[in-house]
Image (cartoon, rainbow, N blue to C red):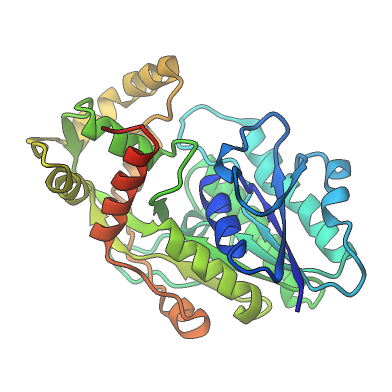
Length: 335
C-alpha cells in the first residue's frame, strides 16, 4: 500500500539518512522539506520530492502537506536548530518551538501521524550515574542550555496533545549522533576531521552516549508504525569517553594516539578562545562551555523501552567509526 512520508530537515544529517532508508521501498512517497537556499547535496540522486519551506513561516508548509485524501501520511519532524555555542540565539526557540507548533498545526489539519524528533537533552538529568529512562515531565527549567530548554518546552506540548487524544504523535530522544552521511559537518564529524588531520592534539576528560545515525533512523521509522501514541522512546547507545573514541579512530587510521589529556578546569578556561577561533574559521566549535558541561553529565541512558516496542538495535561502535572514516574518504574529505 502506498504511503506518504514528510521529512522536515531532510538535507540534515539525520534527515537525509531517513530519506535514503525510505527510498529503498517503492511503496513510499517521500516529501523532503529543505530550507530555501540550503544545499541539497545530501539528497542528490535520492528518490524523493523536494519542497522548499521554512517551519517558522507556516504558509510555506502548505504545499508540503497537500496530499490526496485517504493517503496514510507520516510526518517525521527532524528540523531543528542545534547549538552548543555560549551566545544567546533567538532563532533556536523560533525554529525548535514555534516552528514545531506550525508543523503540529499542519499535522492536525491533515490527520497525519507525527514522530517528533526530540533529544536526550530534553530529559532532566539524574544524580550520579542513576539510569535515565523516558519521562513525561518536561520543563525548560529542569534542563541546561538554550537548545535543551527549547526541546523540553516543545516536547511537553507534543506529549500533552497526544495524551489528550488531540494529536497522533510519539516522541523519540536520540543521544549524540555520529556516523556516515554528515554532509553538513556536525560537531562530532568536525572532531573526527580535525583529529585525523592532526589539528586536534589533546582531548579532555569526559564522554557521552554516542549513537550511530543509521540506528536512530531505523528506530524512527519503526516508531512511525509501532510507536504508541503519547509514548517517548530514548534512542541511545552507551557511554563512550572522548579518549576512547579518538584512540579507536587512531588505530583505524594507523596514526598516533592522543597523548595529552587536558584537565577540565583548563579546558573550561580556554573554551571562549576556542569558540572564537572556530567562529573565525566558520566551523562548528568542538569545545564550548556548554559542550564541556555535557561531557561531565550523567549519560547513563536506557533504550530498553525502544528495544522492546520498536525492535531498536545498536551496531558495534567501532564499526560506526570505521564506516564514518570510509565515507569521509569516499567524499574526498580525508585522505
